[in-house]
Length: 406
Image (cartoon, rainbow, N blue to C red; front, side, top):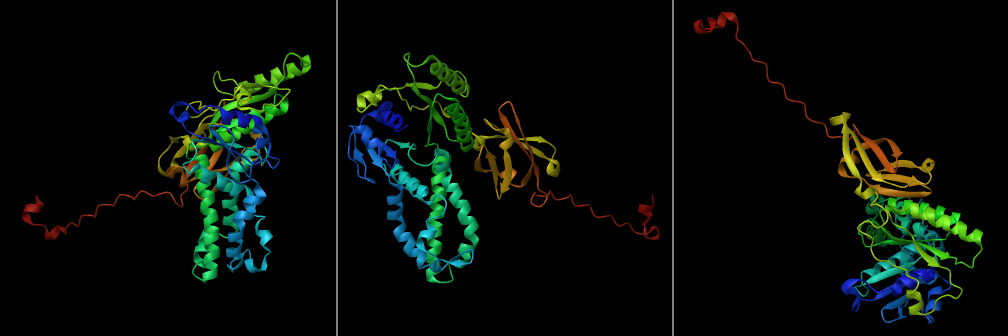
């Protein structure tokens, strides 16, 4: 897959951007496959040019952690704050590095910083040598949820005024929290992040593609291309070629309309020049506004299905592949709905009208996932009852004037 990422990186930029625009290829592979592909010696953490338009940045997660954690660790050790009743000063510093996803978060933060530096027209991230791509993209949410369980924001805010040392610890945790939320917005809400799925022409490749496409749609990340990698030629055994054709056909059926996956041939000798990489035909050009998957739940259709007031029923619907319908789970967390499918759990911010509702049920029919909501009486705004008109006071009969007696 590193070869596919390298081939995508050397693809000329479209339009005016191709004049002078540079591409940054970022790799997490600890074996430094990308530098071997280009035949260069790289320094981890430092971009180096590998062609006229491409720079390579190989990141070592442990080195990145060591570099970034020094200052954070010093602030935390002297912070004096507590996590679950344990003072930070009583904890070994390495225990804090066990925070789920902290290494991946630091890698994502470096990618974000490069993206916002203005140096690059395009950044391509090769995920083949690190964590699973979906797990990597979900790290900000995982850490945010973990921080909230360990030390909720309202408790951090209350503790910040206790001592200077505690305030420093709160500041560090708030910085982590802010980084997580910022990266999550960049990945799932900015429209700046797109994905390419690389699949093997095997039954396992088909299953993996199903799950990846479903997860990416749930996260709202456009897919610009699906590539079937290492397709054998006529000299391969007939049984293998038959299996690959069938797998390729099934992967094509996962894509909308008449879209087909790109076929990348198996090569006896890995390409080691820019010219040979370009001949692979890897294209990362945009495939419309939503790419090869729909926009997901963040652009769901929300409609009033029936009723009014507390009797209302709302329906939230979007196109959603569901490889394993039995794994679908729903939950609420504040103003968000938690959706789990095929081992992926995603937090989705609800539109304002649904934040005051509870989930009734969910259904999946012909590719459409629908969730129905009903108003929560505890928070639903109540319409004031019309004020009754005051009763008219009539005088006693004997007090009526002669004119009134008529």
